[in-house]
Length: 256
Image (cartoon, rainbow, N blue to C red; front, side):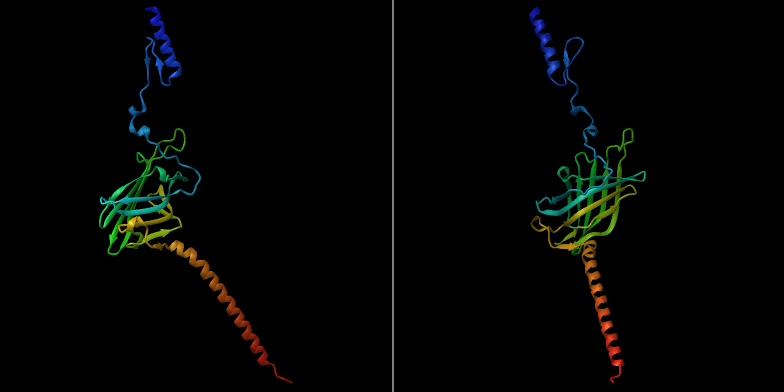
């Protein structure tokens, strides 16, 4: 019987030494710590980490289908959360590879909801359709990041804004904007959208329709042309004025 007892002791020592998570009790028996599955759900959520410096957010494409399998919303954009805390600005970029898409599709109303697993960061667009145009009428954002320093209190940031007709385009067309769109949802939370293209309700074969350019992009493209045209006009006016003055002087002299 003694050899068997020694064999059991050596087996427990081997488990404790080489098997992760196994510990010996005083009575010689082994135990394993509780698995992560027993932890509260909040402890398993991967919370966003705020950054002190801004970086261009990665662009992702998100689609939502109706119960019939037809695409009712398609959106391409980069999303950045801008947090203002104690007069200091912090940033968090949404990772498209981790985003889960949800929402609802109706004939005159639709919702596109983007969220990270566990919803520590979420963004929701509410669309309306009016006659032959669609637009965003409400934007809701939420961010529950890790504290920015050791000992700092955990804080959530949420906000919602109602718009009259945001990102509007005709039915069957898409709204496009390469310029940045900074949207205020609360005094502490802003949402920045970059490289935006969005379309709702009538998305033929899941592809974007003709793009409608935003005013910011139009101004960036048109203002240089206007400046050049004004400059050329001023040069022509100056040249014509000089010719006119020269001609008047020539006519003012009498021939001998």
